Image 1 (cartoon, one colour):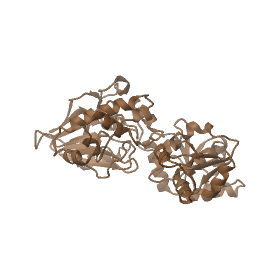
Image 2 (cartoon, helix red, strand yellow):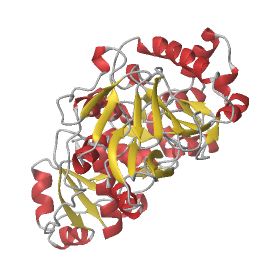
Image 3 (cartoon, one colour):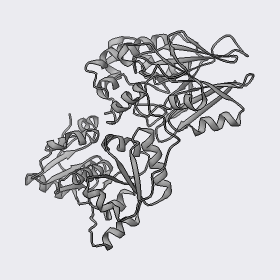
Image 4 (tube, one colour):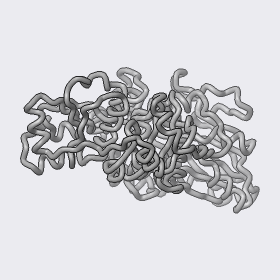
Length: 472
């Protein structure tokens, strides 16, 4: 048996290729939109991808399963269990095969058995993998977002991201029952999860790439709780706010992701078009380091530095129904940002600009701005004088400590709730250390708020200065 794990660092996401070396056939599980790694390994190993499947309708990235099936002519085997409203909507695709609990995908001498494990999502499947050339018993389980190393998939996304009111409690109970089945599996079974540390699909996922059933029984907090109500309470407590784009991804992946011709790069545009596009209301994202944006930027552009958190922040504040343009100071950051945006379905990238556009704008008689920033002490004085204070952190951070006068609007909610912020008053914005608040300030200023200032160092600086705060 050939077994390959693929790991996408920005998404903290794992996918798998399982192949029978006797027949040269292979199955891919949980492919993302970048098909090149799967196709390359198949060629290198002399394999034909004959089947594609996934554990569930993903919320954190655009699934590549449909595109991979088109590219290879493979069967597309997807869950048809769970309620009708959370079943795939593209069953008319050539090669689509509905997958139910107990169904088997046979790849040469390898048997992959689907097991319905609802909880994270209603349709979720896990896959027991048996190498028939060696044994009649399974050797491992591809657990998707059901069981992680040290954690389990969060059951609150249908309610928090897809806005299915009241879904969290029922999903948590489903997850508890699925875990009781997991506990019956033999200890030696390997566990191959769908995510590692950094994913928002759990609240404490380990960074170790795989585990065993026996080890998870001993160390995974969720498998140590035997009473359903206690489990439900614990699994729902402390889950972070999901990025705003999660709800959109659920809809996209259920309806059928658009099949791209690779991951196309946008054309490079002349610097002179930048002010023209801004006047027309275009969304232009500055990918440079936050410090560079703070020193000088073209008014109306939005700062989202290209780093590990780029996809999460971009999915939280950028519109899916508008065209996007990018401004970058290196080809590497531009290519990386384009890939990240396409991976989360922000496909409407019409062009890019180089960093020289900033100098061109200045020399042409335009203006460049610095990001307005104030110290914690000055922020406190302004709040006393009536400034509006906006906290863009998450709710759990807010509960741990916040400025009493501040209004909580988590960054993923800011675009939808901007009108709650007065336009005729001075506005101060803060997060924990400054990264998210800089994005928020640039977003507000790009949308017409003129008097908006960032708190240097965020709530951490406020606390370090000994200024008043409260918890709860």
